[in-house]
Image (cartoon, rainbow, N blue to C red; front, side, top):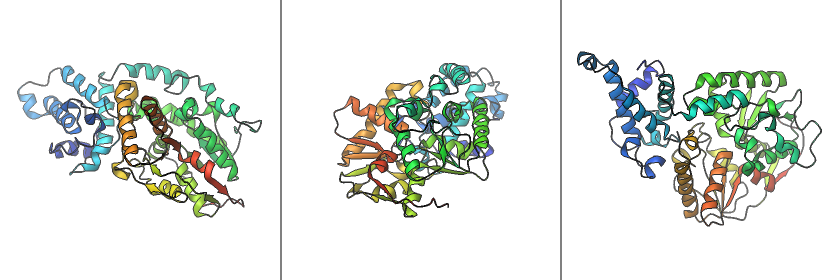
Amino acid sequence: MTLTNFSVKQLMELDACTRCGECMNPCPINVQGAADLYIPAEKISMLRRIIGRERGLLGRLLKRNRDMSPQLTTLSENTYLCTLCGRCQQVCPVNIDQRNLWISVRHELVERGHAPAVLDQVIEITRKEHNVLDYPNEERAMWVEFMDDVPDHLYQKERADVLYFVGCIGSFSPAVQEIPTSFLRLLEAAGEDFAVLGEEEWCCGFPLIIAGLPGEAEALRQHNLEKLENLGARTVVFSCPSCYYTWNNYYKLEGVELLHSTQYIHRLITQGRLEIKEIEQTTTYHDPCDLGRGMKVFEPPREVIKAGAKNFVELPQNRERGYCCGGGGDLEMIDADVTNKIACDLLNAVQSTGAQMVVTACQQCKRMLLNSVSTEESAMEIKDIVELVLEKGIFKGGPRKNG
């Protein structure tokens, strides 16, 4: 291995793993009965053995630094069968940052030609359509045309104070397009000078970065930054946690505020500009992985919900140890069956609380929960937080307050 894709810290983390097995229980892949090779500790052991064979002194003395293709193929199968949810690192006694470690491993596997073949298609599709879903990008904002009472410019303006970056799932998946339409109405009600990019919005690059293809994501990043600069917006808001995570961690912006929808709504409440009417149903909240463990945004969505909920209950596992919906890590393109099984596990956890409604804050999480409801009998109401607030919110008007 070249090891150029691993930081010194990550190489130290590989050595620090004690194979205690604590990462086994929270791993959503392991819960599905996958072979032991798929659990985080075993993947680390496999990676250590490969590095040792190729670069270690003993390996060189024994002339074992030969073709490691079979081992790399196995490592690839195990590494890509992962949601990158990060639950494993929450219980790791030596605090290995396993999520970023797996991303680095994927990058190494891509460079060595041992990534899943589907990634070749992803690269081709993204270069052509600027999204990984293989939809014509000129249709990215088609959902706006089906809204009532929209301005002639369809919210695509030359200049605006606020950019709403919609994201691919919200733009192209009919099952969750109520989320961006609701957030547009919230921004209108709040009196924001905002815009969307329409077909000029390209994928944020997140699916490519976590697939081990950061170079392919660079053109997307540069394009979106150019459009932001042209618009002149000083605030970018997101209803997609993965887009929010990517812009925070990879876009390297200065002087531009980045807010997830939950933070934006919470600010409206604390400023006294928004009240939440009473929510009668017993309600629970699901922490999206990229918003919760990824960006440490745990309390704003809860405070928004509790502002109206008469009876709020927590999921058995929440905040840092919250459940994965199964829709992350590009797993759906690798094994959709496992993805759906993980989503069903989340639904079962929600039902165990006795809640009548589950609120999340992610288009993909809502989509996965809706898929699981379609496979099981359930009267569970599933909403994104922006849908809930549009339904229950009372705006007090007045001038917009910054900060």
